[in-house]
Image 1 (spheres, rainbow, N blue to C red):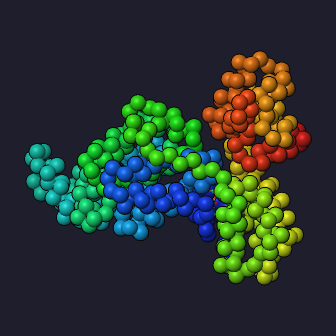
Image 2 (tube, rainbow, N blue to C red; image 1 turned 90 degrees about the vertical axis):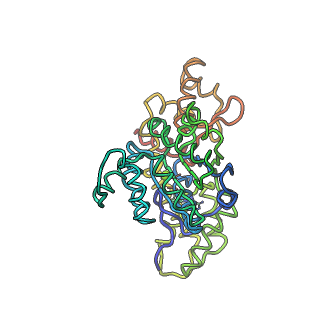
Image 3 (tube, helix red, strand yellow; image 1 turned 30 degrees about the vertical axis):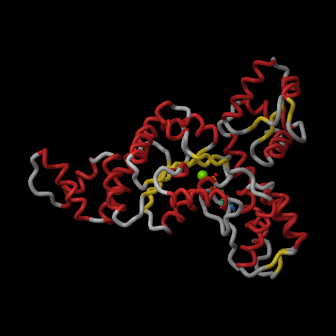
Length: 371
Ligand SMILES: Nc1ncnc2c1ncn2[C@@H]1O[C@H](COP(=O)(O)OP(=O)(O)O)[C@@H](O)[C@H]1O
Ligand SMILES: [Mg+2]
């Protein structure tokens, strides 16, 4: 039987669990019309917390209401991709004649005569983000729908382009246009951007931290896809799987996938399968999540993390400092660096803990293996 689970970044799960409230907020913002705060929304969370699939979900939701969607990732040139590809395509699909009518307005002062398709497209290419968004929202208003722009992996590296997008969105909001914007990124990246002076509207955006998923939701996230795909799982096996996720969405899919594939032709997932599946998932988590997360960490960052890994729970900063044999200001400087990198987070006064599940075990294994 085909495996319903698939652990891959950006791949929507068989069942999206624990995010109903967040999705409802967005649906409501679409209904409530221009001016609703949720018309600008930001999702933040660690790698694997489900940011990209939430963008997929809001896009589906908007499309279901007849909205059109421009979906981009904040890598260099995203504005160009919007103005040269997505928006011209939408305009062409919506109403080719309107494109030409509009273009006449654009080309008239240049004294151009005939507007054929080639020139029409060329000029549309040159039209800026703002005028294209205006054209699209004008056309959509005739149908009573609007435009959703989503932007994944928001990061300060793309500040100039983000400013351009923000200015356009802000104008459209002010003019009462049917436009919504949903962005996603690591909390640190999003905070940097939100604190930029020009991006004030993002500061007022609704922010949702995509944290861990509740236990009963994780249970549903396993059981329902398993049953829908024609197999069963008993409670003891299910509890082994649920507990091992720590509420971490990526691990839900990874454990589901690894457990399923052990005996895909048997009716029921056994306790042995669950135990083995969890073990395999943990090993793969190192390659898929921990290793990439640590790729940009310096040697000192890693020693700090290793010093933390000596504890079984949150680490006291005083202990970490003593283990490293460094002074308070040095340690606190690295603490801030690692918080910004989303590898650790504050855990009450004077304590820090790991952001990613099982990073502690991963670091211990690496240390034991002498890597
Ligand atoms: N709420 C959820 N319920 C079930 N699976 C989820 C959920 N959120 C994310 N996933 C799964 O976790 C994995 C990582 O999701 P993704 O959106 O790529 O994370 P991010 O963009 O935050 O790094 C994917 O396999 C996805 O299907
Ligand atoms: Mg992502």
